[in-house]
Length: 182
Image (cartoon, rainbow, N blue to C red; front, side):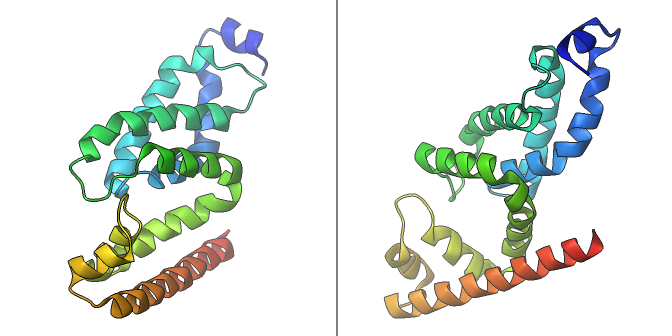
């Protein structure tokens, strides 16, 4: 369906439904890489979907719908950042832009892994989850994570390596199960 068909059709949003259905998981995975938890990512996905609906007549048919939708998601995540500013895990703009760029260019390959990582992070015990998130938090590092957890620097390095291995194995396992079901 070309742009003239979308704009001349009595309901131009009719073309939107299959596009959203096809790309919703990828848009969600993209959002989920930039927000602290699944519930918030789902809320932002809903807001993003509403904006996509409202602005669909501006979409140029024949261009990359997923890239257009992810750009809208990017702005929705940025708008939501104030809400998350009180959270311990807030990424700075440079990190968010790097994540967004990477996600845009690798969305096909990474969407399953991103969702799996979020699921695997939720499976960690609270102490390990805090340790790994603090390690990658803005202005933080292993030293700060060690101090906050009451571990020595050497113990913190070992814990982080162990947590990263657990996360890696969990992600690979989840993605393998997903691919087997497909």
